Image (cartoon, rainbow, N blue to C red; front, top):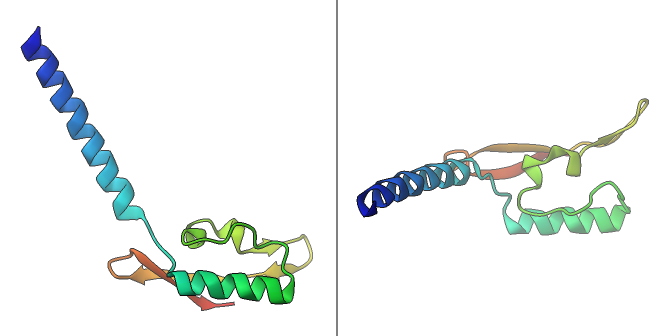
Length: 93
């Protein structure tokens, strides 16, 4: 029984490591200075659509891009191809 538990535990541990590596590989981070710049722009222009801006906002475009049926209210374009696709930069607003 002890040997079976060890093999099962090893398999589970291996799967956890593979999953964690996959998530960390896909993390695309916006540099903190760009986050702060977006927050300042949002405050200055009183943009209510930019809620919860943080380093992962490029991964969630709904945080930065807002449209209605008639108008585009805000549009922020991120390029996440830097540093092996782990770093994003704002390229257009």
